[in-house]
Length: 555
Image (cartoon, rainbow, N blue to C red; front, side, top):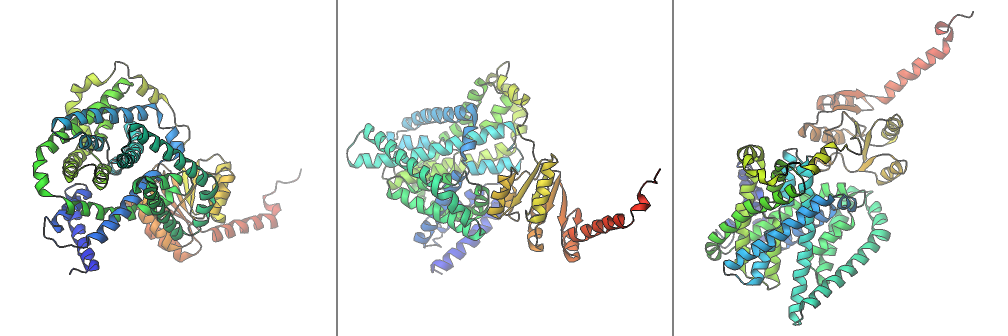
């Protein structure tokens, strides 16, 4: 069974089984994938030898991951991150790098290894944190919004760090100094920014609008664009990771980003499986054994020190200790970016495999423990809350000001899926009557036309559960589906049921078979426009033909 296809099939079966066990134990599946890599690799049973194929899939997975990070980085969102997210993110990065650098030097490592590992300790897992906060329904809480803000700051920092380390390689080859490194980074960043601006301004918007006429074509274009810029970024002296990030960022301000992100999420998870398996297969246990105690010491620093740094900064800025504590827990682990960052250092020849072993052990320990810390954050705060008074001002003025703010835009009371003639008319009529309403459709021309008329419309596929997670369906009072086919409605209703959406669901159908199927699938009310309008028209005709019956008597 040493054919690559058979090996990959076996690998997927093992990963699925071990991943299911990890889910049952409430552990992140990426740890399970690393364990699978160890088990099937040279350090284990040597079941898989298709390392080149696995490595290629892993590289594509990393490109898709960073493409999605860039895709979420909308310029409008960046402008509204606020001073607290920026200050907390930069402050945590600075103090973690400085303190971590000193700790690693005390462990006897050279300065470049200490710098790589210290930088790696600053990055928290955006994917894991957002998943945990979403599961706890805390993404819209104050600490959730702040956490997402400084996670974005970290995502920007990791890309800049990758660019800086790539530039160090070029500088080292020419015996250049720090000034040349800085000039190289600034020059390439400015050139990339100019090209990216020109593409975003004149090329990408009409190109993506054309691709969006087909959901499949839009997905293929997104992957092609991300991998193409990843390859171009490596050729230009940056890195594949930086190129993929910029590819996603270039599409972040388009109205199609939610649909692209939703469709790429599953592909990202599938391809990252191979990255973590490949990582586990490459671990050298002879090196890991000597890294155990240093890894435990650095894990304690990440689990305790990083949250304390965040709490201190947020307390100084005027937030309550509970908000600082809840937000601080989100940086109590290192990220998959940390492992990618150190692995890049190995490929550049800056650090040895011992640095990757150390970072991986810290990642396994901190991700596992911090998951439990976040899941049980409230009981944990109740136990140690009295010890955290030092992190709260007498008058937490900034949090008090936030509490007094009202949302600038009311959430929609009605969400309409399908904006054909009936759905679009319903959307515009409700809007004219002052009802907050949101429309959803996967036809880009329909979306653009309704937006020109001032309607709130989102582009995306209502059957996609990942896309539904981006919509305010949990706060809506009514959800109306005018999707024309039973298959589309079935996918939408099943996804809404899985999310336990409390809204009343109305189905608009054209025949009695569709009516019965929608009702059985969970729709609360059914409307048949043809029958209902016929009844209404009949009543209008009756009133017109018999005006004397209802008319007042003449005087």
